[in-house]
Length: 291
Length: 349
Image (cartoon, rainbow over all chains, first blue to last red; front, side):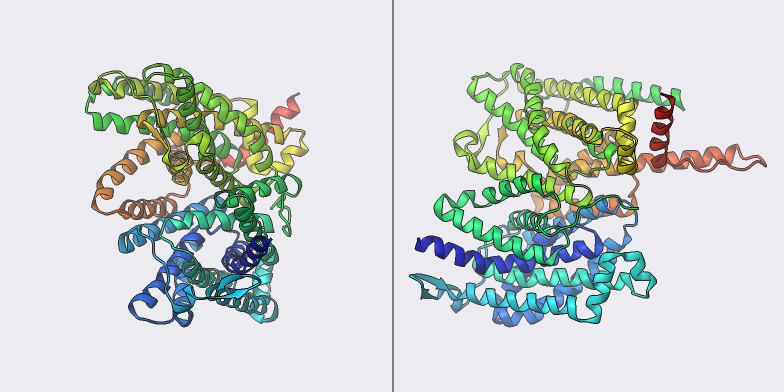
């Protein structure tokens, strides 16, 4: 029983980190209608950036976010400007491939620089733990949870309480109408893409501190993130949050009562079952005819 | 134009038939086998995704299912290496097609972006299953396939002709679909699905049938590739790079055209093999880097594909040649023609 409680608590704590990463993905989808399949490698890139700061410059990883998040934001805006904006026709198909190409380039680059051997972020609070409810919880999980919640609240305020947020949601609802009332939709899109990638950087730091990773870890990550946003409903921030929590809790509980190797599979099969009854996901809208 | 195309295709076919006799170098014929197989896979992908516009990135699901079917059949039926496994390839395709029925039924409940993501998720789910069902698939260690019995310098030749046969079958199916009323329905779904449904076309059954036919070819190709390479493991069978390579070949050649996938595969696959051979030896990751850059260049500079671009150029040249004082014919847009043609046929009845 303790084990199951531990699994649920760990699921909630790590779920928040996945909520952070998938929020970036679902936000970009909502505003730009593209699936950023490079989000997985962006997370790993963020983890490696934190790794460099910790390992070579001896900057604490949480402080280092003040550096890595702006850098990744600029990278995101750059990618949007250089590649995504150029696609005018067949956006569904070509944008996926463009982002996959970007992912391959980053993956190849990371393999060349860091080789395929696993890395993990090191800090005193990564290994230390404190007792709670009969088991030991490493500090890093709590810190990562607090960071994620902080950033998610910040994102919520940005999207729902600022002028930029209004333009963002307007572009989400109807791009043409938003442009007609004077919103610079292209600028909104570039900034949104930057925010999505910056969130991946923060998620990457948390991921890199709780897992050992290499460039190939991005495949596991992106498959999880995609499943999360489909379950939550594509383009829904609330959906991404709820689905992340569900996925990690179900995964961790499965790992305890059955076996760790089945944790992702069980969730994926649950998703397939859900899609039979609710194709649009938990909070999504059904995609119908578009003119 | 019509005659030129027929003659060109015939010449290509004859060239393909005598290719292994002319070029007996093993490295060249290996590349040729992969090229033919990818051309078949791309033709199959195009049959569903190209014609209907449903962009699937889970095609490797069926490739992997076919591959595992062949490997498992060889293991449990104790098939010796030789010509026998070739006879089992259709079974691999069949198993993939059978799996495609429920999977397609689920995936085709959603459209556009969500469909893309659902197909990706399916592929990764099957990859996980291949890792986890250790008692059946031997997990990450993978399996070996029976080794062929013929001599090494003859090694590639049987594979080459079987691959060619699969490609011809795929191409013939694609040609038949493209020129049938069924294919017209598929193309019309790409243009405006709700309107076609309103016309009384059973869009669900149309899409699912195409999905299943495409899966059959992916399964055959998957079985062939693992028998050729001699080993199978989850990341090789359910390979995300396969999805993207096949899609890219179709885009490069021209999505939804008949020979586009063929052209794309003929150009891209040898290049990809070459990159892996050359760059992979310099440093791990360099091949990914170059392939990614290549992908970007193709998409940003050739988003329409080679065949549609050439066709447009041809029409332009012809229009310039025949320009009299009269009004130039408006450019025929292919996208709207399918629906109109279908409407025409519907009203004929």
